[in-house]
Image (cartoon, rainbow, N blue to C red; front, side, top):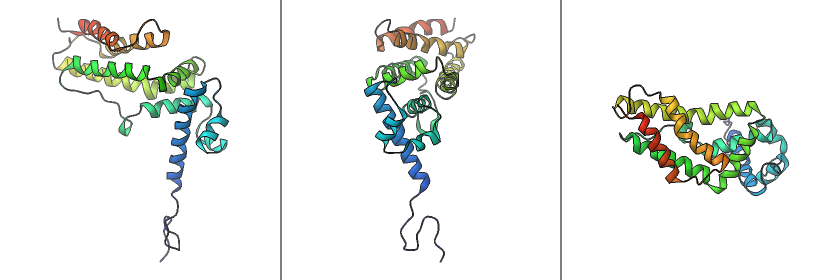
Length: 207
């Protein structure tokens, strides 16, 4: 009997290279999140990430072209959902569902372990348009589109006016949260999120 790629002649299973790669990738992203929380973006280095993850620098450069790209993927993994999809809850109550999403966003933005990570990539995208485009395409746009889809369902259920622009409404919901988080103009908490929601919903209601 000819041994399969997963079985050696001694009967032991050979290591799965793809699984080894996935473990290394996850270790790199985990190390990136931990290091940037400890030392900040400016002091973060590929060498430091490699050492903390227990891999060689060449392993990192095989998958990412720069430090910023590694940080960006670390953010994506921290914010990813099962299957990579983004969907808002649909309980039949538009206000309740949007409140849950906005409060979840507040919780994510104010989590100490991820705040510095988020701020690092936000600063980086001001100069790196490639990373900026990826951020919009892979993280921000899916969230906005999912919110717009939930608002569209609300329109169809008669919970929002037919003249509502769902994409614009989604921007109006999240914009103030990111503005306050980025500029620190005041407390970013559930009370603020609820106030934003109340004002936006006032413009969404059927007339």
